[in-house]
Length: 156
Image 1 (cartoon, rainbow, N blue to C red):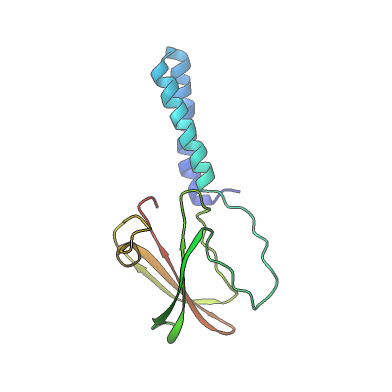
Image 2: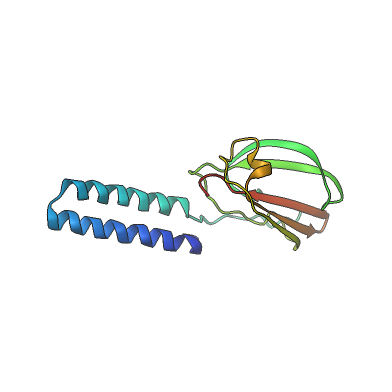
């Protein structure tokens, strides 16, 4: 399955691939063959990047799911105004090979949203978490409040 907002990029890549393949055949040009292969590689990469695999979600209210695929970089104690005190911060890094879908981690109601414009430093850099464009989402659930944050990187 592919996410809807990725389809326009994939179709653009596929169109360029078909177009350059046609030119390569018509002109019998090595340069167009190479360009068409690069376009095909880009299109395949876009298909991989925008994939949305089905997830099996347990029917258990006590389970909090990860909001994203990727590598957990750290788990830290933090103070947060939205949740009204201390909580845990789990930092997850998404490489270009990871599924780039963020999911709601637990059944609840979104009651806070804040978009913060910013820069696009590489996500693994320290200042990316404070300086990069990001979105914060607050959620009320049966046991309290939760906040999660999506931070853009240089590629996304």
